[in-house]
Length: 399
Ligand SMILES: Cc1ncc(COP(=O)(O)O)c(C=O)c1O
Image (tube, rainbow, N blue to C red; front, side, top):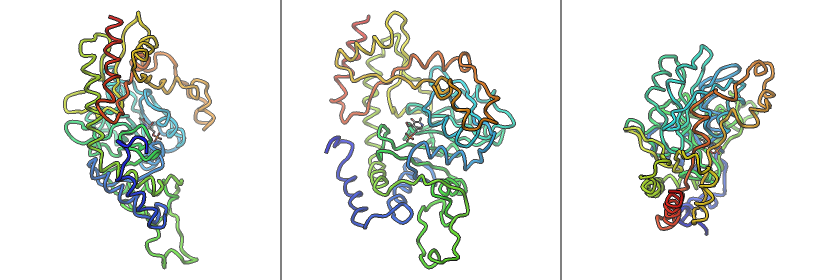
């Protein structure tokens, strides 16, 4: 088996349990339920619902808080395409608020300025492992009766004001895609403290089965009720976004090991951050007081005009570095947006809306091309050390 630091006996044992039980879907097996309970407890929320991705979790979250045709959803432009796609999937209108150039997260002042009487949800992202500025965002939400959906796909274990982030927002969404702190290959899990929201999300992700409950995705517990020609199964609209039991078995094992994964990423991140402590042109993502960065990747702003981003990366690789990731293009710079293709999702609504490509979110436009993300997803410190050394050599080379 490859990557034995990441996958081991625990994962194999839980997967074997699923196979030994004769195999089941999440609507009848117990593994999804076990993963949900373990994760909810670990991140500090009452309810968790598994999904097949951290995109479908966001889709369900928007639907659960009532986002529909023509509603506005405020989000950051510096994020993955998922955040845009789920807004368009609901025939809602994306509204982009600028970021804080130091934390790279959405700026609550910019969010407040974008509120209208059509704003239905705010979907900040806790980027690269650092909580978004939840205090003021929750205040804005309360004042205007708008739900806050924290996309914490990359932010397992993050805290804000010394509290677990999952205990703060109305809904907190995680991805279990392969690059994340814990993984099921692909998948997602969403948490909330409100039973009504959990039930709505579960129904949205599982064909609207009436028997689904906030804390249980199984529907066939009483066969005598279910197997009746007059039984009506569905009382809500829903997609089938469910997580397979084998994936949930992985999720359960990984959740039980979450602290180890968090520690490893943090220790490796610390090496990278120490390596740039004297470097004037590489500035790590700022971590405000009361927050902790759980470092999905180690993100920094690269600010040097005489050596290009690409040149720096190439030299880093020459010295044995393991690549540097660029930030995604801003959502409104992506081809689907810039080409206008997104408008085909709902022409009567979207045809009148135009977004400026330049000067729309000036901080995000300035910072995005400068972001360098260093990889910290390694099995041991020893494995990471040559890459940190490569960074030191690159800095020395260009001094
Ligand atoms: C910030 C953020 N949001 C959402 C997602 C979507 O998750 P998934 O790939 O599981 O759909 C990701 C994962 O790439 C992400 O990084």
